[in-house]
Image (cartoon, rainbow, N blue to C red; front, side):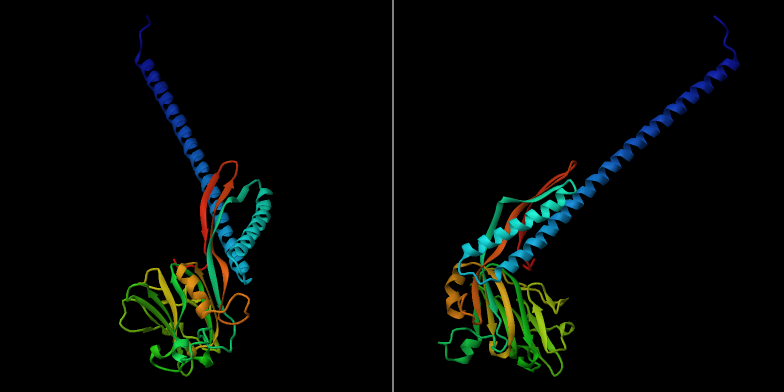
Length: 329
């Protein structure tokens, strides 16, 4: 065997070191490749998921608009309201689905899963009439002015009022003005919002269940001939009104009452879920669907539920959706 010199040993050490270094470089490259591939996959899934969530939100908004638009047709039965809502949702789904198919995506409402919840649409559209009961057999003005608009309901949505400034009570005491009250059944828990005016503005005040007196909301004051107040979304003329939180501290079932209704004129509407109490009340204080008078009720769809499907080559997304436009959180 040939003798191994110090020079040979040095060469072996260098070669071995180079081999180890090369192996390390290869391992680093492979690891970076794996990480890079993983990142691409993650980004692809996130992008797909975001698209699916965007479709879900778009569908929720679209169906919500359909439900509210179709509800305005003064239905005399729930079956008629349900059929029209279902037909319009099916048409919307077909049109929207074709647009997604053009991009290689299946995006659709699983129509066999579609269900609806019955409700009532309550409206007052006569701007010259005070916000009083339709029960003309009640001769005492106070009893017509203080009345129950919706009885024994669990859910209320899209409760909007447009009030005229000239009809409101000018006062520094909110309780002297018109108010909307939510009264929890079987308890003393109540929530109130008061609508009144001073010499220059339409004003609001709120008394939550735990409050001892109303709290004025000066940041929500409106200067103008009218103000549109959305009680269930907490806005005035489309702008957030801090402190205006629907039925804070009150749980359902509850009654919705108008108090001092002779101290406000304009328009209002609200949609409530069907209840036994509402079935009894509707013909006491409200005119019927075909009366053409205010205030009136008509049969409506309160909410709808369904499953959405969103599928691409790399993503399969399904989710349950419930649509109840402008329902308090």
